[in-house]
Length: 296
Image (tube, rainbow, N blue to C red; front, side, top):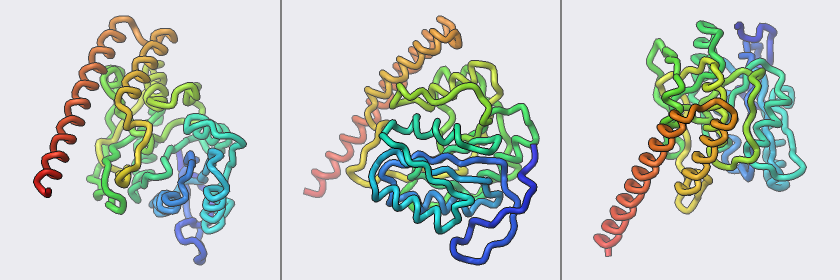
């Protein structure tokens, strides 16, 4: 695998004079829903890559004229030859948005990024180097810690080695944060639009359990920006997430990708994880109560 060899305009300085650079054979797909406050920072982190991708696809999920206008402003700033805005006619959720971007992508690799997350500058450089060293890898990810917005990702430790992730890990937890994933465009699976929670976990499981080699760099090459007070997301409903993961395990059994023994093992691990999260949530609640009483 080689980087794109043709000269391309440098997208890293909107409005400034641009110079030819080498681009990675990667299409970045970002599902966009009411993301006008965060999308500029997300795209700036893509443009700041030491090895920038060949194209960026912003898939607007019918969230309104304000978001669409913001996406077009970002595309115009960096160049519509590099950033393409895809407007969906009706809201379909992040799975559909990612699938639409995936299908319209022109490059052999897809990189996923959420509109409120940011990449470290060497993220693509290090992942593409790992793929070049082992072209049999179909998916590669890395750590994505949750931090306060504006926190830079730490400098990577070199060499950034990729470790193969086996099916046993997927039985217990989701090791691949969505905004860390680079995967082959030609893989036969897509995000299941029937799932609003754990749809990423389902896709990674289908890929791994089908026998594809998947890997992870155990370093933080992106930041998931902590939500502001009062903001919630789909993953905050622990009970719903647990139900979703139970459904995905059953789906994997029906597809012949998970054995009955693995199903029992994964279900027990899921229940233990649910209990752990409930305990941690309860402890955080008690700490907040103690703090508020102490200030009263």
